[in-house]
Image (cartoon, rainbow over the protein chains, first blue to last red):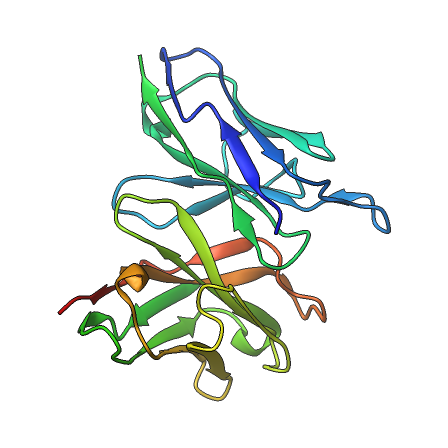
Length: 113
Length: 124
């Protein structure tokens, strides 16, 4: 199974500042035949289901604010929130879909400093 | 609008069974693979199972293989999860989620639409 490890486990950032969450996979999730990274990011607010933010490592889902961006390739990925808003307080998860079983990172809790 | 609504959760004794349902609306259900994902209290997300859009391929997490069965009825726009031999560690909120790629032979990609979840508690 591919193990997904996020860092940090929790993060406190001031409003308007940049937030960066990292995700590392135990093996590459870059599929050579299509040159896509099989990596997604989700946001989960308390009492709500997860919400898809980013897929193919850097493609923003429709309706997601452009302050959210994804980057990286192979085994190392980053979710960046360019200017933190109060409504961004949530737990963020990365997920690989390169191989079965699908696996998620353990989550990163983002709070306001 | 696109919507998934889970039902069938509840309290069950260890060793018991439960069947979850997920009613889909607002999109062509028969064109999309579907997932079940669970979240134990205070814990992270765990993928449980996937079924291809036509029901021909199914995949399971090792933790549920042989105990849970995913199925679908495209005529009723409904996804199911039959859970047998339930254990305490199966206690969780169970979400159904739509696979992000329509009409995919491979399936099992990211999840672009999620239901609100149904709670399963396994306890004596």
